[in-house]
Image (tube, rainbow, N blue to C red; front, side):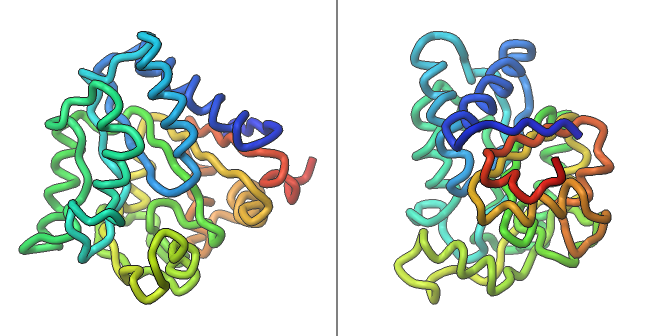
Length: 243
């Protein structure tokens, strides 16, 4: 596990974009695992800038997003489909047939989970998985207690996560209580993992992830078992670590 501590969110996002950009140049048909939420937004902005400057092309890139809320249509402004189109896909030369996000509304949600796993497998697996982390150390929507052997599945969101995500909705009551999320085993099968965190609110989660015991109570702690993980954090998120 490689830990990179930088000054602030801007430096974190710059370094993350450099790593992702380098991987795309090295393998133009790379399979990326992508994340939503506030943490990766500036990283996506940097990748868009690289594209606009002619440094990167996303034409051959395939991507799989970590999760989607159950009950939100893809056209909903709160859906992760809308988020990714707004923050990245519509601003680069991404082939719309090559990006995949679980469907929040479908006839059979359990089948959607199984089909998503098959799509990842058929694509050859994820080369680089981008992650954020919740204040309770969840990755994807894998809340504390999630089995390390889990695959893409229906998950119940904790009250803590619902309250944290309420800032993206008009009220806490509008936040869905369930989601489809890649499981921890699915995430761990990525060839390389890049986790980003910034701000003091993530400091405790980072400490437990990096230095604590490997336990389902801290979902991100499973990353200690992965052979190729890079964690980029700012000084605030790193303040609880033993220096």
